[in-house]
Image 1: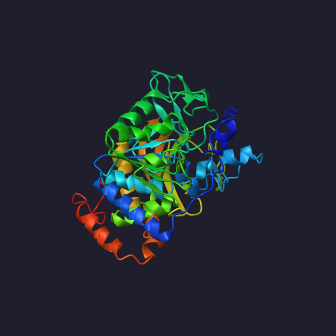
Image 2: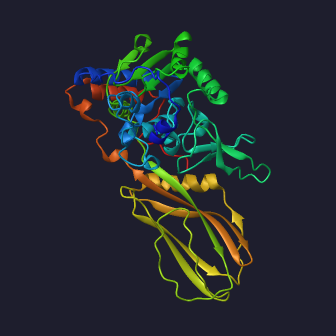
Image 3: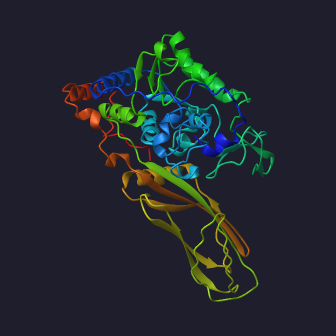
Length: 434
């Protein structure tokens, strides 16, 4: 959930029940429920996950209706709570990355999200298997050709309004619109229709970190029950749908999902971030030779350097990553010779990025870069580079968590039984298709 999003929403008196007390199942009860959920996930033929703000709180983003939620504090006259980090720097949580692996394993068919924080897409979850019911604070869309633009900054507006940018398609050029709904906006038809279709087809809808109060979205999971499916809920507060659910777990979402992944012997992949850099080199008529190093802090990065047309030189561009990344920096080295025009090319972006991500996933420290395309003109050159680095590795932590250390003799046997019956799938031998 975005604090900027909360402040931009139009005022509404009725935002549902807020400030409800949190409930925690006892360690023994929690363990039994996690084992039961793992069995349900393993046996499911069409698993759909329905997510709310509770799956993002461990990334530092406040929820809505918890004891310190946005609307809880606003109703108490305390204003919007502070986030622990800038919204655009929030990283996918353990749960986000676990969902990526469940999809790769063939267990998870679709995710329906009420969140606007873009963490599902940042995690690498496939866009075609994701419905964002309330929009995405980092996404713009062209209303004419329907092209989506995912940004690394929060879009300025909400309510499906025009933004300052235009579609880059040469045959279009329409003004882009934000994708985040305000209270009076209807759910986007394409997202809603695919979400309803998936819920009807699901034999299990797993609701994670949602109070299930906002209509019409909150009623979607129940569509599976009408067709003989089941609903499971993991949330720290009671929800209006608890009585209709086959399983209700009161515990931290990350802890519950980590336990399920451990039982299924599924590895939680690292969060790997991809950034794109466009480098423009243009020659001017001026001539200076004192090219000193410079540090650029604000985007868009712009730097002017003057040299003669006949000068041949190398330029080293180093990008320093934030603390906590898998590596500290990565560099682009450019050899500049304006008298010799380089070859223009466009590489297969999907294949290049897939190979880079596979390398980042295998290595503990990976800060790679690769050139994707280059356009060379007389006295000018434009190139696009991709940077890939791993930000967070979840396998460095104890995936079993404290719930696995509570003395049950059934956990290891259950894990062995489930893995043997999981259609021959084993996380230890699972590899990305590189």
